Length: 484
Picture 1 (cartoon, rainbow, N blue to C red):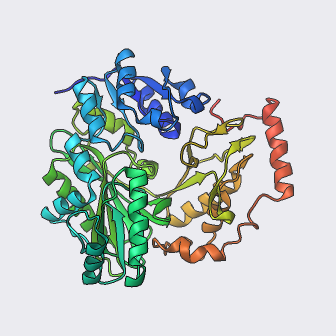
Picture 2 (picture 1 turned 45 degrees about the vertical axis):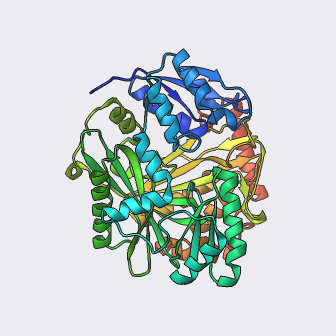
């Protein structure tokens, strides 16, 4: 049944909140923003139709279903969009929204629950014909049992938190001697971040590529894919750069990935957007690793090559609308690359950087997109992750996309906090990256070869950028990066 949404509360913050607000405006839907005490200067608050403070601990405030639902009902919202992170993968929150006559913009609670349990999802996907890695079928807490399982599979193995993601509670074990120490480390981290210490063990694939398939599915049984993203460039299992499509993927393997992902989602009756993630070994063998039941941080690269607004489709599907296109109507054009711009120092083991952004100049021109809630004068809260924003570039071919990225990264200037922009500048100059020769071990193998100091702003460059910034502040130039 079609139920038109007129007002959405966004249960999130930062750039994803701003992204959802923009989608709402284009759909002529009212947006309601929430903000913690440390987010009082957030740009998304200023552009939303309404905004309300959430009290308490800055992190816990965004994790309170009761308070968020209370605000949504008070503001007379029809629906809640959780964005990513926080409550986006909480089946309990999805059910609480439905129980309070609020549309949860996302998949059904049972699918969030299924795929939030890494072991249950692995079993379910295996049952519908999806290839999986050899390993445990149930979560374990017992260290001795885990060691026996690891030895039977054969090292190297990987330990993963059963009820979490984002690289947390994950350890690679290469020998039996180090198993116990790394098992304790993984389970302790799982408890810290997810409240549950259970883990599962599976065979570790050396030098794999991490490829994910974007799925869009309505409530009427229609499922399409929007191509793949190559997320192989990672640090500690967390994505750093994402590419669409993969610059080095055999046509037959690509088709098989699409077929597997679509077939699984059809069989399981999935609704909304989601991402089916795989590892590919050196021989292009495919292994399912997880399913993300939310919009991904890296969704912009897919939007650019497909022309599909993923956030708007999420909202329309939640209303009960049918997909507006069939698979054969979707065409992919060019290559897009997303760079996560973080406030961290690559020269000091990626130590988070905090402070006030004193100058913020963003790149522009054809094929350049910035998704960020930062601006000149904005103080980065230390309570959340270190991402300042995302730089996305597009070109008709892979070589052009890399050149576009080099130019755009050279234009991106942030003063006041240390960022990982110098690292990105080095990556796009690297020969292997330009050839698309990337695996999940790319950064581990390359970090010592990068000259991060050499690409830091020189005194001359800083003087020039300071001059440009002063012209902007005096109103003599119209090149400003704070959304004003």
